[in-house]
Length: 346
Image (cartoon, rainbow, N blue to C red; front, side, top):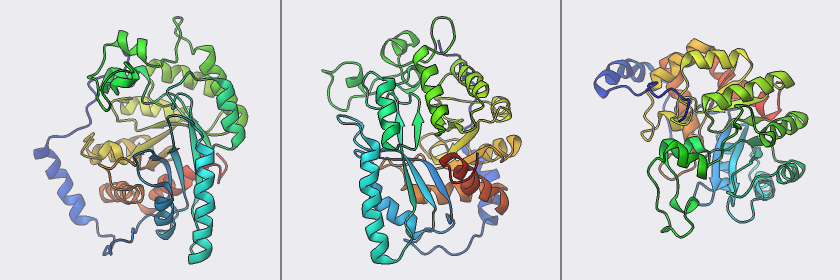
């Protein structure tokens, strides 16, 4: 079974949460908001945004982010993730249209980057495919996410990923760890070390010096990845949504990871109603580990979420309300993500 600690619950009962949230919400006074403008995101860079099939429109989002003064968006998913998976091609089309729009409006467009997931297309991963996408110009690499064995064991997956004849849209219950390993990706071999393929992925990413996102790994996989990242002297490694059920990191574990130079990327998804992490506990975690290796992002795109620009406003606002000051907010929303995407030295 998975090695992740399961009792690290960051939800808080409503009766308790209202006591801690009311002082924060009453004290937070950033100024009047005039919709549809999105204030409070100037120079922010969202490094975890979704815009593939059925998600938010990448171009429309880029325009709104530009109008709102953001500096950039890293699209974790863009275009098709089934069929022909060519994220950089889809990203380039958006860049071209965004540049035309900028010329017409006089608004400076955001910078845009596309991510590549080694298992995102649900096909057999290969170094050749990853190399091609890096050569095409993708801005970063994600290790297994939705089809990782850990994800299957926590929330299940689309039935068609397991049985091609299953009804369209049907979702499974969480799978046993044995079935999760059967149908999902797992980065360790029987010897407890990274499988050669994943070690080669990390080495190629480090050679290219593009960001590496760990995906949805177990504790054991995280430790193996960190050992290799440290050995290679690689400084652009990121763990997304550390409080999500796919990682469920304790604050002590986060401290260990940032001490090795790994960035913790906290997301709006975690504090949304769908996952229900208490924003105060997120703030307390950031305060405990320090802001030097912390990033705030949206992980938005699904229709049940606000769009990514609004999610950036919200997560920044929550952390401001609970106690991050302006300098700290600039660090986690602007400076640190700029280091990840290469606008500043890592």
